[in-house]
Image (cartoon, rainbow, N blue to C red; front, side):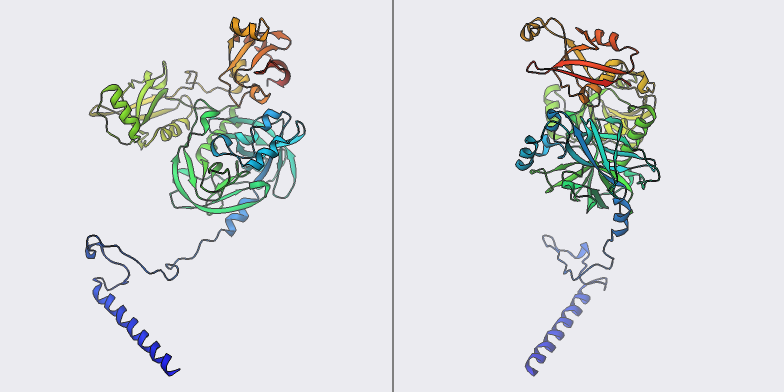
Length: 504
């Protein structure tokens, strides 16, 4: 025992001597494990001995979790068409992330009728039953079932959708519901704590924690469902899995900062990052849907690329014999006729550096900032042209070139149907053995046709038992028409279907 006591005393004295030496060598006389940069020798690396927390309390998410779980619901998408089941609403964006083999087999075995084709999550945003979720969670549904955290179930009404942001608004008939509050998603910082709340794999009221990993992230995933996608996702390492889609991403206070939408994973399950639509954009979209029936979105009317993209810059310089350097901003490569930008004096080759004084770092940032405005709104666009910089005041237009806010009642019949139509060629008529019909083009997944199971390049044969051969025929049949519509169409293989829906 005396022997070990001696060793202990020697060790203690040695430690005290060493610590004293550290203090003497440290100019500040403070913590010896903190070294000033002026004392560091070139080529040295600094190490610190971590022996516990640094004097702050560990985060506690109990209160935020209890607040958030009661506002998040489970959503079942019922579809009576096998082709809609193949879209696999259960797993967010399989075409990007992959699909587990077991889940593929399960889907193939599903019957055609009366079975949920997918599951997801949603967030209650008002006490009277408005619920926000992802468009891909409810896409193609003939019936939408919502189950609250208290296990009460409701059939939900689809108020409207926006494929450009993958947001949908639902409504259930109920009062006095717990609901989440939006917070300013622009104010969050990389490194802030966040919680993902949803129903992964059908497990209700699941909460995972992480941090904001990045902001303004574009992953090129929404272009499949929209010609003008807006991607400026909040990236997080909180675990998000199939079934979390449409659920809440909340801050440490339990308030909404985003709607969980996608996961970056080689397996289709959590092993990477999650992406959420920012709350500021979600709020604008659902307010538009509630007030107007459709989303009001401003467009600049440009095409371009990120100046931070080195490959794109090299290709541009080679093609146009320029010497543009990589930088922040967006290079304008094409202008839409009668668009907001060209009417305001923007030219091809201009570099957009800021909107309303806020720096533009990427095309996704530009799309987000402009897409958060409505037609008729004015924005200040800072543009670099050569060695000069100028700010233009631009009045935004919609995709149709109008500065007016439109309601659902202002839509043309083909806009309600959600497609454009081309007459059949003589060869196509001979191939299908018909002398009438129109080909479906530019299908909008939020339209009536997509909801009825029509896909691009299907052939519309008749509407309300009247044969059609042009887009004008469709417009004439449905102009000022309200009520039930019967539509006959053929798929790629010539199989004939008849579906019905209402125009209002």
